[in-house]
Image (cartoon, rainbow, N blue to C red):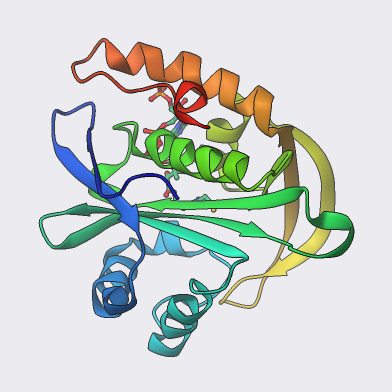
Length: 206
Ligand SMILES: CC(C)(COP(=O)(O)OP(=O)(O)OC[C@H]1O[C@@H](n2cnc3c(N)ncnc32)[C@H](O)[C@@H]1OP(=O)(O)O)[C@@H](O)C(=O)NCCC(=O)NCCS
């Protein structure tokens, strides 16, 4: 994994630290989830208000198949992103991306910054195809992925049952890592103009 922690600057000028999730982040990660407004939590796949669910995430972040990053401001987690990879069989060249940004830190480019970290790690691991699985109603996340060149690959009808028990379609969007990275890099250059120089992930990968 690349050199962490990394300091990055958001569009507002606020600096946050990006680093891998660590064992003793459990309570901070849980507080992060509890602070999310219900509309942001609604479509997440598990009930992240449940301490046992968050504890399970912490445990599986030790597994080779999971790479999880957090964005930290002071001692608060303000964003988290994960790369979920299948190490065996047909799917080992693919990885799923997940990202959640705290409500007060959205629209500041933090998802793009965290996706850049995931792409860097995915490339290091030899991943060729990245995908996201979203409820059809997750329009912000859909915009982020489509902006990076992801295309709708499958719609699974009624595939998600929310915590309230109702059914929603799940959309799988995919992209080759090289295309997504090229698009992201172009977007990051636009951000560079705001201040700090962001090193290119492709140049940074070895
Ligand atoms: C989706 C999410 C991760 C975006 O995070 P973010 O840090 O606000 O995103 P960024 O600031 O990096 O924005 C990236 C681009 O996405 C688009 N975008 C982001 N939020 C948007 C919104 N609410 N509506 C429309 N477009 C949006 C914009 O094109 C934006 O680029 P721009 O600011 O240069 O125009 C965040 O809204 C979130 O955590 N939502 C709840 C959880 C979720 O749905 N996660 C995804 C499933 S794993």
